Image (cartoon, rainbow, N blue to C red; front, side):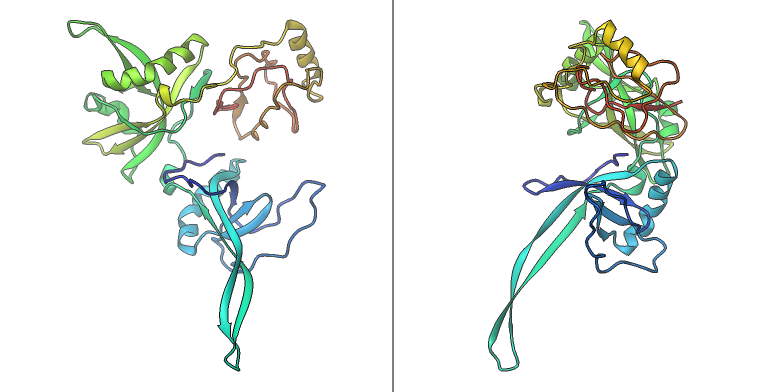
Length: 339
C-alpha cells in the first residue's frame, strides 16, 4: 500500500522506498540474502508504540516517539488489512573525519560513518483516501500541481460525506468531459465527480489542460482519476485536484494500453495454466512486468486493459507473473478493488 506524500520530494538525493511496520521485528529475506547485520542501536525495546522503518529488509531506524504515537493506529489498521505501508525516503550516509585532542594536547583525527534516513509522510488523516477507487477500468493521473474546482458551493450535500473532523481529507475524483451550452458558444469543460456525484467543474483554461488526457483514456475505455483534497466543513467546502496537466505527462504515458493484444490461443493457454504459474512462451525481448500487489481482504482482482479475461473468481497465486507478451498495466493501475 503506497501512502500519500504531501511534502516536497527529495531532489538531487538518492531515494528509496521504505516499508514502515508497527513494531520492530525480524523481516524474512530472500533465500540468497540470509545474512543479517547486527541490530541497529537506539532500538526502543520497551516502547509499545514503536514504528520501525525498513529499507531492503533491514531496519534503518524508528520514527520519533511523538510521531510514532500519531501514526501507529494507521499502520496497525493497514497491517490488520493485509497491507504493508510503503513511503518514499531519503537515505544519506558517508564517512566523516572528526578532529580532537588527546591528553597530551596533540590533535587526533577519528574517521567514522554518519548517516540519516528521512521519510516523507502526509499527516495521518491524509495518508489514505476516504473513498475507494472506481471499480471500472481507470488510470490515475500522476501527482502534479493544484487545480481549484469551481462551483462546489452548489454541491455541498454531495461533498459532506467526504469531510473529516480535521478539516481536510483526500479522495479519488473522476474527470469527465462536459459540453456547456449555457453561453452563446458551446464550451468543452471538465466535470469533477466524487463516487459518481457531480461536485463541480474546472475553468475553461484548466479544462483545456486536462481534456487531451481525458479523451485519450476515454478512447481506450478507461476513466480518468485524479487525487483531490477536500477542505472545509458543513458550511463551506472546496475541492482541489492535484494532478499533472496533459502537456506534463511522459511521452509514453499511460503505457502500452491496447497494443500487442494477446491472441486467442495465448488467452486459452493462460486460462488453463493460471493456477499453476506463469506462461513462459513469450519472447524475452519484452520488458518484465511489475510484481502483482498482495491481495487485501474482501476484494477482487481486476484485469488491466489488453489482458485476456480471467475466469470468474480467479486470483493470481503467490509468485504468479503475467505472460511477457501482454501489454504493460497502466501506470497506477489498481489490480484489486473493494467489493
